[in-house]
Length: 208
Image (tube, rainbow, N blue to C red; front, top):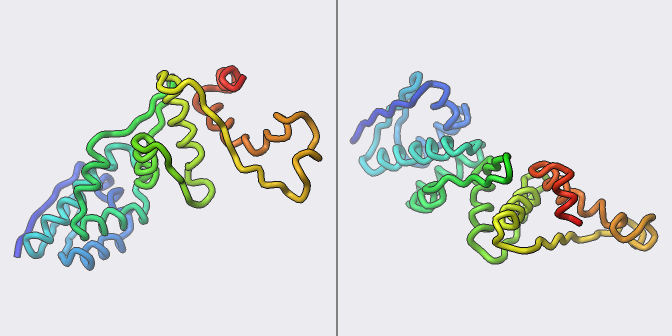
């Protein structure tokens, strides 16, 4: 049996690592087969040598993610825990070894959670990425930000905006206005992302 004590900068910092949810600490005890005692900013870990070391590594990775600005939700915590438990902590080390910040003009964009961090990492390193998930999780916004970053750095000459035009009962030809006005509702999320980081004036110049 091994017993280790880990001290965090503050009680608040420690609580943020496990999303201030005691059930997450219970999950660590169950999955990693360790015993945890949390008091203030101190965490005491007891168990078999390898299990204690895995638990220590888990909180080290969570701390690294927090310092990079990632908001650790319960789902992120579970993903960290299961990855470490499966002996694949090296994947998280590779993902978090280098902070990912995209600077566009005066605005900095950082991923808010592990899924967004992984999504950005894939976009930057792969030729083609499919982002599948519920609305509002940042898929369109992050893809647009990476495209703008590449354009402003001169890595690409043009961004092609493409969206599926799902007709609502009538063909696009029946909608009022010219072709640009007909397609505007479908492209609005892409334009909104551009407006947010560049401002509407510069975004419009790029569109034109």
